[in-house]
Length: 439
Figure 1: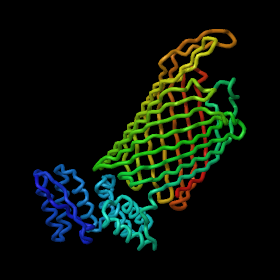
Figure 2 (figure 1 turned 180 degrees about the vertical axis):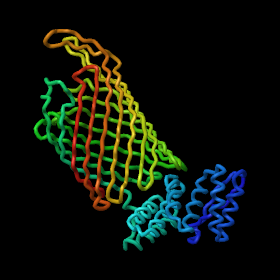
Figure 3 (figure 1 turned 90 degrees about the horizontal axis):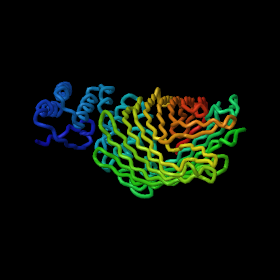
Figure 4 (figure 1 turned 60 degrees about the horizontal axis):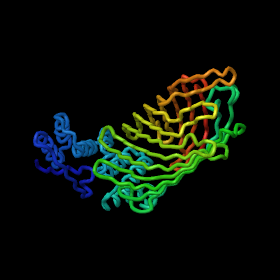
């Protein structure tokens, strides 16, 4: 194998050199493309690089050179396509973002150009790339980027909404079938690095959640959590290891306190990325909820792809529970330790810099390991049966961004839970309108 120099096309004039190994079977057309480019014969260079691609060469170097050659031919849409393909590669991401910024400038989209230059600045390991991105940001905005600006992030969301089934049940002994209520919801999160960078750093994260119903306060929920995480990166993978503690209340009474350890690995792979996450938690139920105490483990496998205008995700989640369950003095037994399997799909469309639409659909199967034993309070009839549930969730969120800090959103959520125990079957419709801020 021979090491062949990558043509640093867009950045060549700026004196940045890169290298990549290319196999002997594919390097002839690739090498001829390099020579043609160095002779400023960009049309011929493109033909050779396309031949190399047609022969099966699939390297980041080739995609970079294809993007650069299209750029020199003023074919900006084609150039963008290839740089998009390598923007998730840890070693090439900063270069890709910088070149996407150059393309956006040529297309007179200064807002998008600034976005890419800021991403290049944050991702760059090289002072040279960081300085180049800094210079372009200053030329466009008149102000310089600061490395510290990307270290801490604050997210705040406030919304009002309506819920036609806060109790999530059809049991009229719990709540009247016609009951619905309005609510106010608040979400907050702050996250930042105590030391290091996303490539190798220690991150602190804390959050709060509160949904307060107007009349049916018995279903109001609030919670807080705080966690410490170690982030690291290799060539194609990023890793997160961490632990967090949390506390939740229902109508002011403690529902649960928990501690979790989390491991996450994400592979950036040109076309389709892989995200693997495992979250193991120990829960301690409050005085009225001791039956939920125990262990919960969630394993999530997620495939996704994104570019500037579109992101899709497909995933599977397995949830294992080993809880205390509930046994009454009358001999009734209720299992709270389901094994759950979920599959989901999510699509994020960016119609413009201001308008985005996220849609998501999920199917969840819940299987309970032990039979429920229930006694009818009127007839004393005993029902013994394993609880089995199928749930479908759908949501659509439309967001309008005023700027990079403030946005408004409207969200609709639908849930249909089908259980072989009728009182656990329910349908729910929720609507929300809210304001978000990211600092």
